[in-house]
Length: 380
Image (cartoon, rainbow, N blue to C red; front, side, top):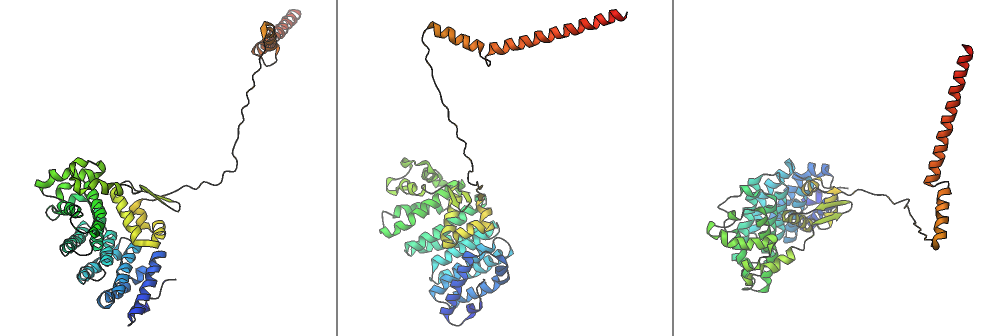
């Protein structure tokens, strides 16, 4: 049954948290759209109150609920309105320094689900990118930086690279490579975001528009590095201390297909792998339910249903037995020839039978013809 939304209006924060928890559980495990399409405005408005007045735990739950709501209803008017309200709410929430990871995930998910509006997608990417730069300058927690880069990469995997703003993204590749170098210059904690940086570089390379992510002067010097990110492993193109190839070895271990129930999802590109891994992380224990029953995700990943083959009722078996008989001497050869010639199934025996039958037929026809001539002469 759909959860009651009454407690979302309760004055006590703990009661609202319980209501949000119940709503999240419902969104993960039930994909009936009628209830959500009729109540998404109510849910959005109550989540907005949670962002403004709730505790850190309540803000985290509200962000998760909005993302799940968009993912469940799928592209269309509902998702577009969820995106518009989120874009008004989430950037302000990021400035509050409360639950930034949950807010970034929510922003990336509602943007990912929205109809293919390139300008709006790039707008969300710019919001996240500015946040990444700000947090790196402030030396904020590495997990927050990693989450922001991962959210940005999800939207990069979605967009058409040909329409990217040529001027805004010129600093992307130099910025990421500086982050890779910083692994050897700052505390080990900052190594947390290095795998997501390599993942982002691989996506940039896959899009084939390196010139949009760095200045023209730097394009040639970074091509070798992106070649490594594009699975070429050209270690000579990269300074040894950056150690990009070592990070890529871990990145390349990702699976290229995923089977859930009777559905098989082929993940042949870095973009597809990124989308799948990000959604799997976001949905958590609701992933299997959504990947099987959510039509939007089926369209994104083009899942194929595995043909069911019933139990085998009969398995034919064949035994082949070979026997060899040794007959010594010429006498035995003559006897064998005689047996072959006299056998009813031999070729010569069959030929003799056919010849006798043919001669018998000719003789019978000859007799018939002679009898007919005799009768004619007698009558004449």
